[in-house]
Image 1 (cartoon, helix red, strand yellow):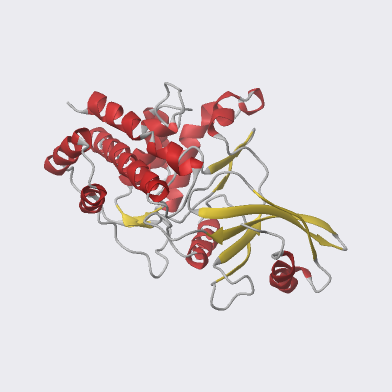
Image 2 (spheres, one colour; image 1 turned 45 degrees about the vertical axis):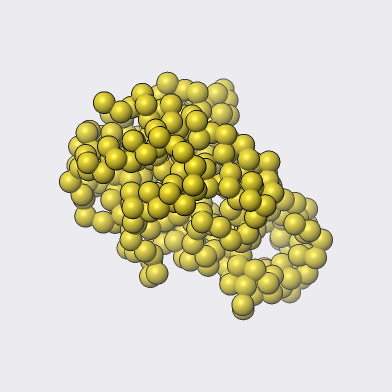
Length: 321
């Protein structure tokens, strides 16, 4: 995406917060993000520089997520509920915003987001033993949030079966796992607001712990154990033997979650939701690869994600009883 023409419209967006003399400096696109365009920049005023992040809606797709203005409302609600996160500076829709596309501008929270660095950087060693419990407490706060108007209820396994069928490719392991999950559903918990993508990679971490929860675009109404199971899925361990995000154990996560007011966690149910997360990631890998292969969006990143389908199949074979 050409960013050269964004400076003027972005400046117009910022004037309500920083005044008419605000300037935009060092606007550049960040790496990563398969469904959003993320840029960093500074808002420069007479009082100094304000590090910010701009997110723009990317090409529409099956996993493009909630509209960015709704995601901004979720981030505002999360901060009110005590969930660590960036302050939203401005947000708008394509139809009524000067950028011509859905957008959100938020403060830039300093810290590490790259999972392998979170798991290995010596500077983050003081935080790592506490991260699993901290995630439990944060998820309890997420699940206490009042639903934002417009959030939909999750369709669960039905949705992933439809998407897998639509792919038109043979994936017998995923088919078998789907059947097993359908036949072994645990009792459902009351539905709550679910983040939908709470994992290592969507957290900003510093030596003091989690500083921000990012990427609310997949939020929906669902079973709270979905978030816990997704956090524990093997894809988000990045080579570590620790089951919770690669940085901690089940006991720390569950104890902190329950103590902070989350629902009682049945271990067998959590195992089911962890398998559900692995299956979900496998189907997402297939669908993201199809965006590249069909020419909808040519992307090396999407192609690489598609190659990870086999990893999920192997993980499911090891998890199935």
